[in-house]
Length: 144
Image 1 (cartoon, rainbow, N blue to C red):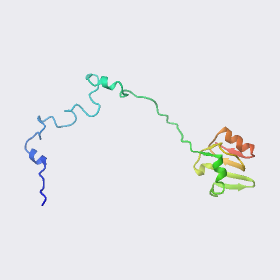
Image 2: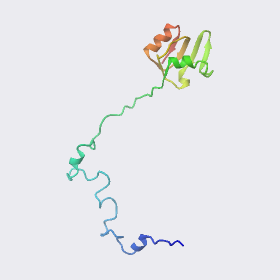
Image 3: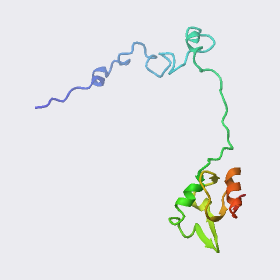
Image 4: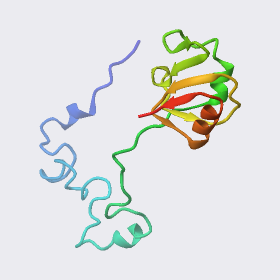
């Protein structure tokens, strides 16, 4: 048969300090000098030399706010998967394949691969080599 263990707090009832000595002591982090790296300021030099080897004080580096995530695609991916692309993204206009890569989720065209078809590609960015390859085969790239 199990026995209900008596909680320690019930033994502290009526003792006013609950085993912490003075009344002031068990209030917050003040009794132990703060939390974490507290106490390493101007007046208490005992911790400072141990912090000099770490980057604890000050601000370091910068955060660039105008970064845009590049999601790139290669020409060889288009060549290999031209039949598999959905009809709303790929349309055939005469002998041109018109592709909207932004709808596909890509915002940059890279030049890896050989161009065998004529393309009209709508994309936000394209590398110089990719533009040259597409134009040399009679296609065009529409970029913003």
